[in-house]
Image (cartoon, rainbow, N blue to C red):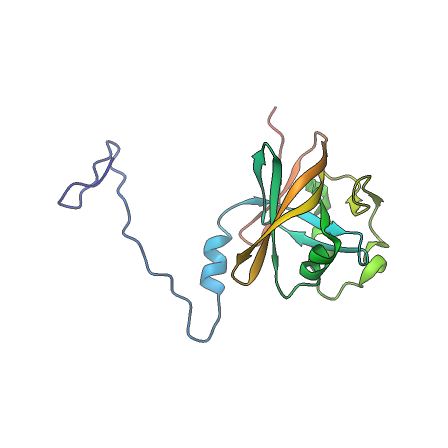
Length: 189
């Protein structure tokens, strides 16, 4: 339903439609208000990995399914991130959807001070994916291996569309990121 000419709500329960608000990014370039607004959308948490040109991992919550036929997923990666060049060079990547008890793993792969290359996996249990060789994090909820299918401009990020080569999952509670914090999401049941 839409508002009537007087601006009153046409919804039976009295809920109105708020007028659009301009996006206010402060002139000093701080994007805190935008980050806070975007943070109100709860997301799952993944670790994106590649095997080539060297082992590398990165925490990402900008992951979603796109299509079942063909089977496609997407992940968004900052153009300045090491992972960006790694995905382009490898032409493939893997994703591990983290379980509730893996918040420390998410923090580790989000830490810009972590070691580079294989050393960043020294404290993490993983196995190489059978299709890409990229690390699959042990204990995760789901694992996806992808070939890079398309790349799209996403402003300061690239949108990597991956065609699934393999997918597996297990039953467990999910790790969720909401309002700047990690939370548990119990399986319905």
